Image 1: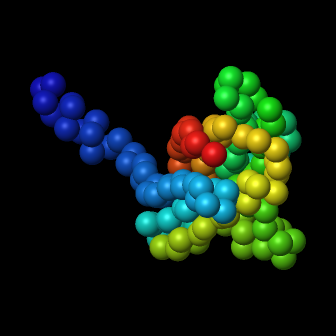
Image 2: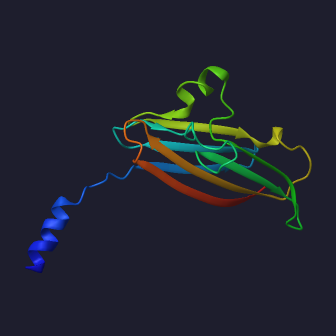
Image 3: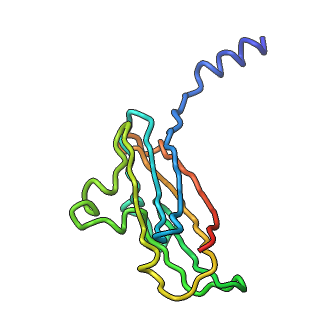
Length: 150
């Protein structure tokens, strides 16, 4: 009887799809640029911006935080922004906030323009929170934290 109940429960349990978004981050030491690559391997369209109703000071949405550190590991400068903040206005308010089906998007951040003094290391934190535009409950979340020597 238990086996029948377990099988019935499994069959009736709603199956939720898991988003497959590959996230890669790399640092080019020569030109001091950071590249974030997002590859959507599904047939869904995802929004990278935080929900409209959310608090603007919340940690929702897809964002990047970079901390510049000196040799003593002190933070000498830090900056946080949405992953799409570096885009031109046309893309920023349009396609730049979306990750289309089976598409790859690359975001490049020129860190040497952010801070021009001596840096020993950068600490990078990336949060990807991508929401399926047709199903609000289908949310992909991933956090990456890494360090690069300047």
